[in-house]
Length: 111
Length: 262
Image (cartoon, rainbow over all chains, first blue to last red; front, side, top):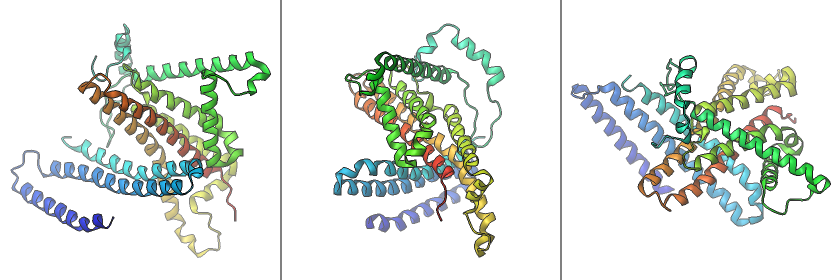
């Protein structure tokens, strides 16, 4: 867990550098698609990618907590299962909102 | 037959019917993420087939119970139609009991159990080669989710009357200084209620579409033996997604009809 947090600043710096460089390239006007489509494509990819990253971390935490509970008390697995499914579904719904945004953005490319 | 082809393509006149219905029924406008889609009636035909299968199963169940008479209270000895349907109903009832309590579970079992059975069989039929799941398009799923959305609010108003609207404002007493937050809370609650059917339908579509895509890719690579574990995974995914849809609908309904205890 702590390794991930150590990596996060590096990842963000990389993303910002990448975005800055693409913006600089787009300012040249040499790209065929234009900077608007480039931004839309990168935004759509980042939206669903970051949503999946957060959703994966959250779902992993809730599943590990549920599995720990089942390991401590195997007889409670039936009672733990239903709330676990609901928690996983509610976490997933935010990822799907990210997917919705990405879908809307990618629909505007080439439109 | 391409990756999206079904047995229905071989029925003479099916494509012609699709072409005829394209005029009056197809959507031509686009808005935001609602892009132009190709109009098809395959998923409707498969959904109809699923409904007919379930109706036939239910009829077989009813006739077997009637034939057995008083002996029908005993659990069935062999795995047949009766064992399958009783097992499913028992499982759904157990899950609903955990979410909304025995009294409400008994009341809403027919409504939510039909969703479970339909979605489960609609998901499972996609594992037969040459069929597609009706639930892997947003058209079917959004219809189901809108029914859940309407039922939630109709049942809520039925249970609480006009006081149901208090749920959107956080049940604050009038003298509370937090009352200035009510407009904000109302907007947030309304948005969260309207986003629920969207999320419910997209989740089912995305999972079934992904499952079908994985199986078809592996089927294209090696058509023998290799797709079998993935199809077993598909059975698991079908069960879990039907379960998730039912459980979330049950949660929404139980939140709408619950009485606040102060």
